[in-house]
Amino acid sequence: MPDSPRNAAPLPAELPVTPADVLAAAEYLKGRAHRTPVLTSSLLDAELGCEVLLKAENLQRMGAFKVRGALWALAGLPAGDPVVAYSSGNHAQAVALAAREQGRRAVIVMPADAPRAKAEATRGYGAEVVAYDRRTESREEIAQRLADDLGAHVIPPFDHERIIAGQGTAALELLEDTAREGAPLDALFVPCGGGGLLAGTLLAVAALSPGTTVIGVEPAAGDDVGRSLAAGAPVTIDVPDTIADGAQTRRVGDLTFPILQALGARLESVPDAALVATMRMLAVRLKTVVEPTGCLGLAGLSAEAGRWRGRRVGVILSGGNVDLAAFARLVAG
Image (cartoon, rainbow, N blue to C red; front, side, top):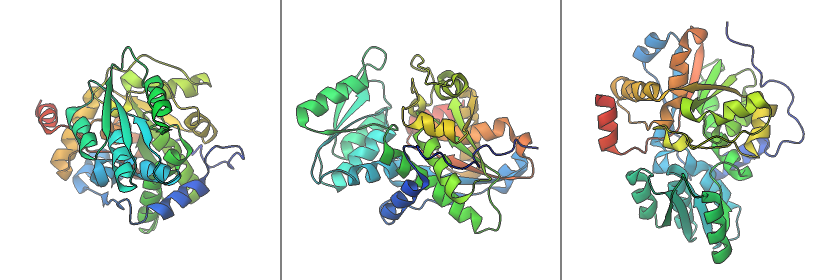
């Protein structure tokens, strides 16, 4: 039997973001972000021994869930104010898109080795890109200097109240859409980098389905969140060497950590080989393209599928922004 849920306790009063914030973001995002479909596959269900419900955020605007938080975060700023963000790709594109729609200047700090498709898309949305070396330079320091020079607001990729609330709307929709089928989800697997999506998911679950167990999944080389929860305080690691570029975080956020800790987040990790196998599985079974980071949740479920045999399990496929040549090499290998 699965572990009993650890996120069903009363919510602490001092949380930096609440379920009400996620609900407010969801109201704003109606008509601005796609309500992405829930994908199913009888072959996948048979292979994993459970009913799998996949929230296809790879089909979201700009190809990832990140647009949810970016739209909501920028909506809270004074009209016309410029923004600076730092990201390896999906948050970069999301902020660039949101800024374009709101008539703002956007400057994005991206690692020089970011996937080319993500950097090109960021520029395509109208943002200026400033490259840096992720192994020798601090993106936070560069972004703050730029913001000081421009009089801009820094929009971090996960450690921001409205970013967390916006990201939680993906799980909120999944819970709403699957509840119509008559039963709550027993578990929900979520990719985890800095913890913004996972924190927002826990808040959405607290609002709609407190009996659902939430599992965050990190790359094995980048398990900073799992280590932090085990240590009881944020832990900083070296830049992770993983194909999951969206989860190459070195440290959990100061805002995300207390939410994950208070709501009993459970973390698992998977190797890159499992991400490649999951990319291939999704391409074959569902004919859909998902980037390595977006595969973390399903790879985590696959690793412990026996634990959820006969249960209803949700998975967030967080994004599909991957260079197609790289995708072809990975899935064909």
